[in-house]
Length: 238
View 1: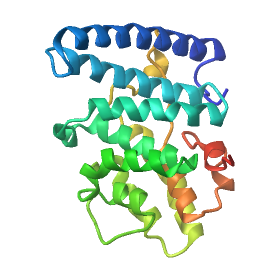
View 2: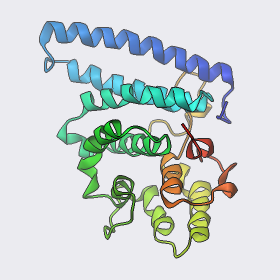
View 3: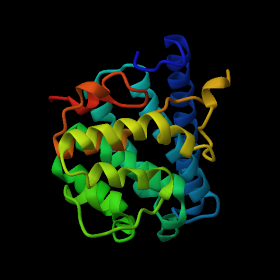
View 4: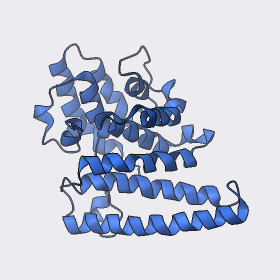
């Protein structure tokens, strides 16, 4: 169990609940596509809902303490549903941006195979030219871009990416995790869900922080017990 807010029974119940809902709505989507075609009325709404369920499950698997190889094995399903949910208009959807950001970050930490990473990059490319963070994750290096698509909290990561030395990068990342990351997501649907008894809480994880540490090859020993930091995922060895 990696999560510190809920117990094992809750997170496993969350996963069982989401597995049942995924099965139910995948069947509904198949039936609707058979009746109306892939572009028929209501199909995209169902696919969008399924995308939320799959992504919630992905994060909850990590919160539950499931093996990293199991999470790695689930990624193709998440990528597949995100491809199905993609439309050009998602570049204005901050939830979709976060999901792209975290999916790519998880892929980097878990050393996924090149073909799957290229599929994620194709999804995320709509953000690359407009976002310093996404560009960094996609290229593995800091470019001259100065704009962050979501200033709160990600602009705070400029200090991490542009620091003069690795120790300073780690110091700024610790500050980001402790002071900025969670409060900046106050407007999201998942913020403060740990206080709700229903199966709505999936866990809180700053996956982008782990990907940055891996790319920059930072010594993250001081971050091991910092809230929201996915320490063991950073150190995955397949």
